[in-house]
Image (cartoon, rainbow, N blue to C red):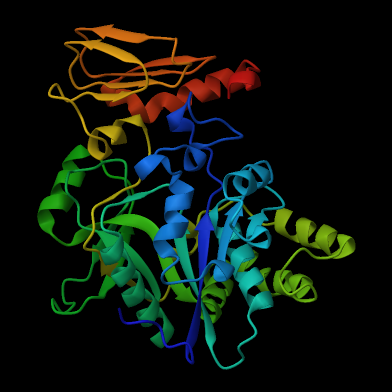
Length: 379
């Protein structure tokens, strides 16, 4: 593996773990969203998988988990071996651009190697990655490219189907075919089905993995230029954190930090920066990837029976086809289906979901309706 030269750059990992996972309701709840569910291999949570996957490249003491205030204790309970100071609760719920601005400020405050540039590897807490060794090789390529130039770097996945639920990255046609790094021409929003098929067949569009790599100084400069309402707050945030070496500041500084962060606009890093940045490169990856965004992703990630159905828990399945059948209630409770097709059924002790297989993306509409009815007891 071609490691980043520590005399030039020091890599830090940032795992964003603040999502609510509403499309995995009723198993995913506000205090235990999908990244803390045992959806990974061997019953691991996807957050633990994300940490273990990157740890051979970036040590635990340089990996940050950025999450919401309501989830910090749950994460600490789930990961008692992880450095507690590295689980950081955002002072207010914000989108990914403020989240990463806070992460950059923490790294600026903690980084002590004057000669080496700090690097950020922005990773996800809830994705499936099939070949971890290949993932690490791709990450090393991205980190080395980010270390040596002024580009923001991302990972792009070769489409295996005309997916309408992902954003896409269009690469420049003139980029050398032999290079492991391509220049990004444009970011494309989630397409309709005909456009997704066109992207897949055209060969110069990749799925946007949501993983990013950059030198912190380059990130700050680009944020100040393209998203100044957020970028200009990074160094003041770092200044507030520096007296505590990037850890929990004193109460008065904590109040000022919270006020500064809360004033930031609610904007995504894709829209606020990546679509506007001066130079963005992409590493086309060589591993199988899925963002595990909704229940239908289990068709791709779990073993199915001869009828294409996924089982978990106490399930009696009589000739049901292409279903996801999840029973997370007590083992004395039986989930039984007879002759149903293309249906998702998820049972928990206090709620049951029955959803058409092609409507999995709309499960969050149920959560919105429950919230509007004041049913916070089941969300």
